[in-house]
Image 1 (tube, helix red, strand yellow):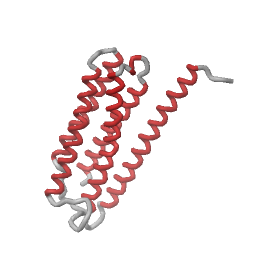
Image 2: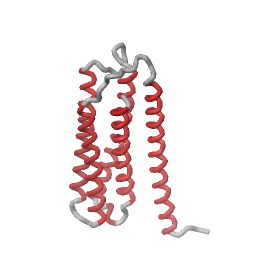
Image 3: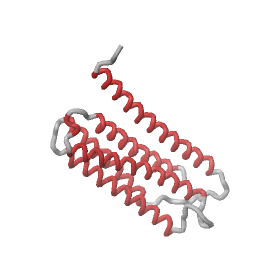
Image 4: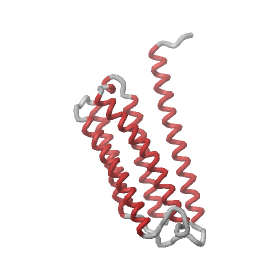
Length: 191
């Protein structure tokens, strides 16, 4: 029995959504493992007890939350065939860039205070911080590439008929935002 085109389309949509779900679950499990290792490592005698997160990490948290709001507006504008979808996508992209800039500013602050990732002057505390933040940045760079594709496809009017790619990108972007908020709150309260 052959599938008709509608059945194939439904199966394709389900498969793409499932692939995204599995990707997000694997990323979440990676960070769950790292944060668990962080908690276990806090019992080490060389753990820094008075370590403070750079202020720029707080600022970057605001930017990532705002970017989730702007991409939500972009999605709603696309549903309503509003021409300002591109503006909201561009705002999301700019906020993503600002998030990245603030992350690197935070790394520079850590380095200027003598907290390094490796070497004689490094500590297990700061090494964990670098690993968590940099690994999130790697995923955010992937999100930025996805966002560029969405901006390009929106410009080409690809989403007038089929919005699945747009919706998957929005879901992934929100996931990255929630992931960073989790990491920030975790690092703030479990120092």
